[in-house]
Image 1: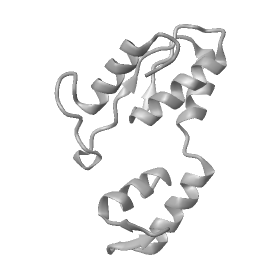
Image 2 (image 1 turned 180 degrees about the horizontal axis):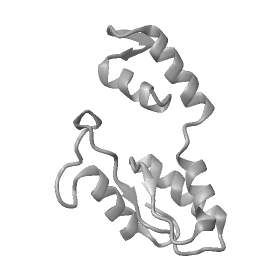
Image 3 (image 1 turned 135 degrees about the horizontal axis):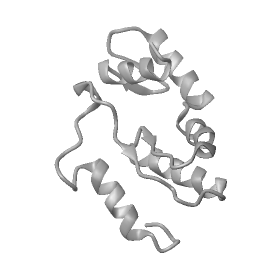
Image 4 (image 1 turned 180 degrees about the vertical axis):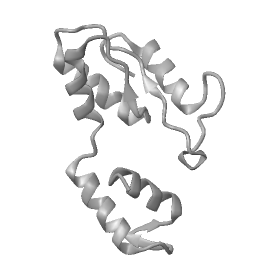
Length: 121
């Protein structure tokens, strides 16, 4: 729950991604792109926008709508894989196509596919 009084909006955003608002979200294996988050209307507050992007990403959104071109750089940066995520993805890909472990966690086909998406393969 967000502390800034937007708990209802947070609930609806989560329900939309988790499947509570009109059907279950298909898994990545279905080949469909993840959902896109709605707009942040405050055009002057880049930190608010960045916080909204981080929150949307944690909920499983794959992008965010922008209402002004000045928002694009912040949104793009927020949805780019981090260096740690890219390093993890490289380790997963190097582990190979069969079921294995990386960093003590099981790696199977869906995990390998996620790693390849992170690396743009």
